[in-house]
Length: 491
Ligand code: BES
Ligand code: MN
Ligand code: ZN
Image 1 (cartoon, protein in one colour):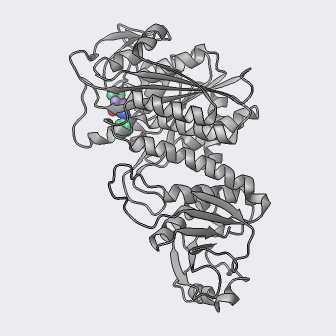
Image 2 (cartoon, protein in one colour):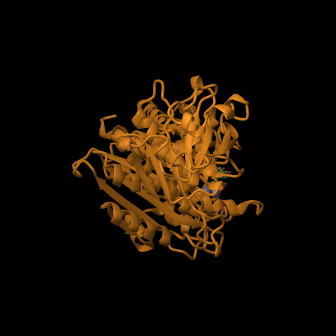
Image 3 (cartoon, helix red, strand yellow):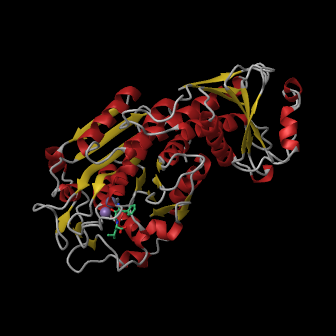
């Protein structure tokens, strides 16, 4: 996609569709409307277009200005507006413009009371690229034509950095979406490692990939147990971005890369099981974030880990009741082979902690309970450290994602005690499922501050929406990127 800043007036810009974002009741583009004979004022005056959220009206300019069409884009009430709302609007507008046949689009940026023009440009760019994304890799005939090929953002040099940042973020998010869309027969752990290799090569990031034998040598007993029932080899992927010269302190990211989760011997019901191809969404978020980080270059050292395998039932598969030991040295009684994510993550986190990371962040589609507790609106945050938890909560907010902190009182650890091992991999019945999943991880990092993001309810959009296509969302990428930016500033 060709994205560029253009310092041109509304009537000069040559484009298929010029998008005009408007708040409810806002006065209209004074420099444009006279040129088109008061068209815009007519639409807004007749209530055909009231500026409501998600509202879109397309007008032909009749050749009176350089743009072929105008698209009035409702932003809702100005008092309720923020960067997230602008990002959404940009996606809605870009998709509506494509629907109307545009191959080039231009955005006029909304007047931003209290918001910085650079960040408005960033979020508008991000929203447009996010909205336009469709996964069509397996379609013999790509669906709708034409595709949007170029986006112009109207403004001067003050928005250049914002546009570049927004594009880097959106492309990392869209990379994560593409990986998450890929089915389990195409995206095996081996292929995921190859994809990671491509990202690292392009971004000048060091990478080490451990195969099954390598995992054995490292002592990743929990990842290997989950992999036992699979005919595919596991992969343990270690990436090092040296934005601070590699002298540390290191920020550690860990992603759950279950390329398909059948539940294993504790097998899942078959209805909707196809959806478990998205069980590597946390890993995709880590990789997407590293792709973005390589472009926006925070002055931070980041160690990023992906622990990947599928979770299959088989004669060799690990079983409920098995006792296994991972890299942290702690023993785990397997009460459910379907609680596999916390096992592979525990090894990834233990590795990152042993490598000396100062702080850790992990993302995973860990529990169905996260959807019960919070729905798709906010992801679950579980941590062993309140100051670090606060930083990640704020990083999510700043990046336009939203999390919510779950409790971590000592008593919650009692919910997954085991009579035979150091801990069980499940809690008591359905009690506090998301907290238990997260606190299980904390048992494997020693004293290192660690935040777990349970993105199970965010990773896949099941219903059509005006902002983003059905399917993979790329949840988690933006928070990881923002965490690295903040870490570079000592936060
Ligand atoms: N990948 C699932 C979690 C999940 C469920 C994500 C539904 C998205 C939608 C995870 O591995 C899992 O199976 N978790 C179990 C944990 C339980 C056995 C303690 C769950 O949530 O039921
Ligand atoms: Mn599972
Ligand atoms: Zn899973």
